[in-house]
Each structure stands twice: as C-alpha cells, then as structure tokens.
Image (cartoon, rainbow, N blue to C red; front, side, top):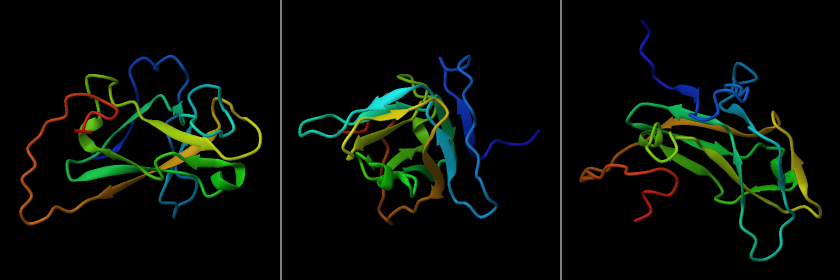
Length: 153
C-alpha cells in the first residue's frame, strides 16, 4: 500500500456534490487548479464590504514540514478577482480539524465594475504545496484547536 504524502480529498459534507479533485494542466505547472464547489456571486467592491468566501468542497493533506498556498490565477486580476489576503497559507494541521474537517475556501474581493458570477466548476484559484524551514531556536508546541482562523491568538 502506498503511503499518502500530499494530496486532496473531498471534505465532509461535500461527498455527494460532485466535487472534482484538483489537477495540474501541464507537466510543468506548479499549481493544482481548484474549482468552485457551488454557484456564488462576488459583489463589486464598495468600502466596508467583506470578502466573499468561495467554497471548494476540498481538504488537502501534506507532511508535517509542509504547507500549501492558495493563489490567484494569473488571469484573476484581469477579471477583477483580488484575493483578500494576497496569498492563503494553510498549515498541515488544518487537515481534518474538528471545526470544518479542513475544508478550505478562497477569499476574494471583486475590483470590477459589476458583480462577478461564479458557477460551480469554474476554476477559481490554484494550490501549490511547499516545504518550510524552521529557525534554530524554534520552540513552537501549540496544538490546533479548530479550523479557519483558529491560530490567530
């Protein structure tokens, strides 16, 4: 049996929603294209508006010394998509957390002049897996207690 190293799974509650596992489109692509799990509208930006969270219906797993990055597509800004947090960084211990099973979302603002309609199955971003390094005197010992935003102490 092959040991799981990194990859995607459908998150709990999304099993019967025809969620597609992300794929790379070319042999040299770094990112896995992620689709929207449902139809959603990203309203045009007005001051004070909150970003729109687009569900993916997915969770991802990776090694303890890895994380994964949620990135905008290169065509995103041209269409008015602007990731609210610039880049999303998700830690390995987010996978399977008790709050939301590790379901990850993309968070976007719409900088265009009209609402953007996203349809289920539209590619909304990409995921890149990466290793990270620790400092010499690192002493982190905390344990994740929940899902989205739970490490914001």
